[in-house]
Amino acid sequence: MDQITCEYIDRLVNIEMRFGQGLPRGVTHRLYDAARAAQGDVPLTFLAADGLRKALKRGDHVLVVTGAGTPPWLPKGETDGPPGAAAIARALEVGLGAKPVYVAEERNMGPVIASSEGIGLAVMAESDFAKRDGVAAASVFPLGKDAGAKEAARLFDRFAPKAVVFVEKAGPNSAGIFHSILGTGRTDDMMANAQEIAREAKARGVFSVGIGDGGNEIGFGKVAEAVRGIQPAGRVCKCPCGQGVATIVETDVLLSAAVSNWGAYGIAAALAALERRPEVLHSTADEDRMILACAAAGAFDGAYARQVPMVDGTSQAVQTSLITMLHEVVGNSLKSYQRGF
Image (cartoon, rainbow, N blue to C red; front, side, top):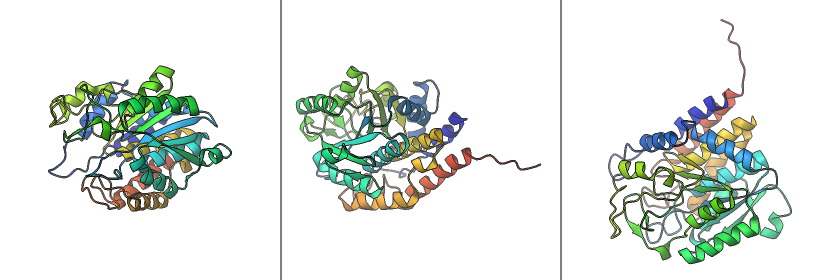
């Protein structure tokens, strides 16, 4: 029964609403199908939520890693990523009693914290975070590979996380280069090399989830060859490396969604269903506050590249409508009613 619920959660968070021209179109269902086929043909929100429930107990730390976009195009990042990170953090705190730690570049941290506060999860100093429930902490991740490797090890030594979730976090391709979905390259010194967190998690046996919507995000290494064939710039990019946008960085579970935030919301909904507690998924009022706060803190819509309360070219109304539908799927799945004829 739980997997039936998650089946339709998966479908909701994979409805593509792309522009007719300007961004890759008609790829969402293909990326999802590839990710699902590679993971036992089980609903992906179920795999992620079930894995997190098994990995985390009350008081355990979980790293929630996000932050996409670079200056000058997206100077403080996108509205896709921070709200999803906040939704996951809140769901794991409310549902499992876990202690979330946000990890992002300094330039992205403002929208991350604003999103968390918008959804009702205060971000506190580590000393205070350790003393109470109902809050999160935040840790700035440096730019560059060498600094990233050192910080990844330090994060694991410092927090001893039992799980890591990546939300809309770019990973390098086979040549070690980061790319936008259209194939524009990013130099190493522009990027937080969060793949080092994924590598540290694998080395230490820590459960990891990657959530993305294009194939260039951490987690899609699980289906890298499929991404190369599906995305227009999957095999050949626009930068001198010529190796395409597909990342090679894997996670234990990959969730492919139409919008990365929606994938995170889907996991929160799945967790609400598995825990039989609808309140684990945030409300439409939370969603409205969060998107407005994220944009006000400097995040840009990634499709329009403007500082507006939209996500990947979809309106604020779409975000709240999605939360309404997810709550309906979860809430009805927990009811029993005999029609009588």
